[in-house]
Amino acid sequence: MTSKAADAPDREIELKFACGPGDLAAVLAAAPAGDDETRELISVYFDTPDLVLQKAGASLRVREYKGRRVQTLKRGRGMVREEHEAPIEGLAPDPALEPLPSMLPHGADLRPAFNVRVSRRQRTLRFKGAVIEIALDQGEVSGGDQKSPICEVELELKSGAPAALFALARELSAAAPLYLAFDSKAARGQALVAGEPPPARRGGEVELDGDASAGAAFQAVARNALAQIAANAAALRETPSAEAVHQLRVGVRRLRSALTTFKPILDGEGLETLKTDLKWLSRSCERARNLDVFADETLQPAEASDVQPAGLPTLRDAIDLARRAAWIHAAEASASERFRALMIDAAAWVETGDWRAQHDAGGPVRPFARRALKRHLKKLEGRGRAARGGGDTARHHLRIEAKKLRYAAEALGDLFGEKRARRYLRHLKELQEALGALNDLVTAPPLIVALALPSDAAFAAGELVGLKAARKPQLIAQAEKALDRLEAAEPFWA
Image (cartoon, rainbow, N blue to C red; front, top):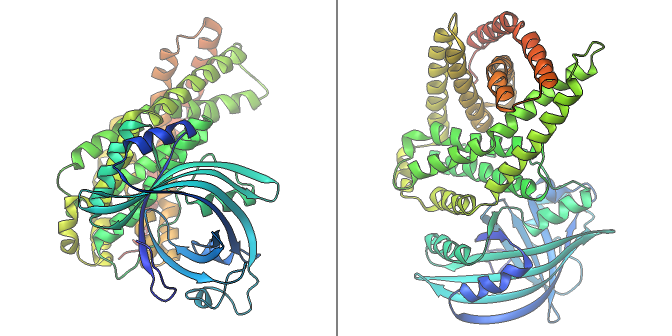
């Protein structure tokens, strides 16, 4: 919902979808009837030379339409953002309008950063008791000599229940392939002028309010993970790569970990389906990731060594061919109807699921986080006892628990002090890396067998895998020492 006065901020509740230019007509035809309008919008975005607003997660624009100029500041990320809007007279923003004075240093130099020009087809309609504005934007963002096309559908809730927004999104997605996106036009412009390539997005930091409820904290963590999934799936569809696959899997793991960490307050219809679909998405990338790890951790060091096994070039060709095929398989999964439905349903469950009836039951986030982290550590300690002297399966279970604790600690650590959490996370990463190297020894042989390599490449692969396997006792010792250091460390939440 949009604020109409600079001193009366409100929340903009919006869903954004990327699509192809040829899909816009089908989306509009599938939308319920309403009041239509076509607008040519020119927006200039401003920031200081040292990007004060961007670093604060905010964007400031001046938009001109029919001779009128409106200044808009948006703050926050995802589908729910704070919005301040007010008419102005000049071409430049007014730094005296709230909340700019509290965000900018005195005398800050606001300069144009980039422009956005779009042709917008807009319709206001009623759907399931809600008033929704649908906007179909086609145009470009430009900064300096850089340009990037824009083609997207936005659904903004003007009044009514947010569930109606998702219900309409599902109907429109049945008419055309719509991909849920979390990057605003401002974020697109900021990346463009920074010269940042669109592929492969790491998960951003989650800012948690210590006074918030556990439910609100879960939503913040889940939104962040969904944004990472959406960005890397888009990168994978555009240019398949090892890093896009990796970061997509990380986003999925972060969301699955959040479902485990916040399990005491999560329940209700849709949860099991969400878990199943996330597992499917992760498995769609698993072969690609295993091949990438083999190429980077085993093949590449062998190629750099002075003594190389015969058949190594043939093995490299076979691995690269298999990697490209696996990347394409992952890209196809991220372009599928199942993926598009998963993203809409996951976002709907996070924002409007019936688990939210237990919002207050979770209580304040800090004590909840302390209990959750303690629970994760207890499970890890149990897996650790089983892994000492145990086999590959026991170490695999320990690795999974280490990942869960690490993602939970990364998401919740800021509540207890960044420095303390960082020290503890170093111990967790050491354990995870040692266990990961051991896991690579287990996954490599079946991976190689499945490639059906020619004899010289199979010989080279067998030699490399054998050399790595010879280090297994050393890696087990490293993992046990890392586990010792972790268990001796004082938990930062204690």
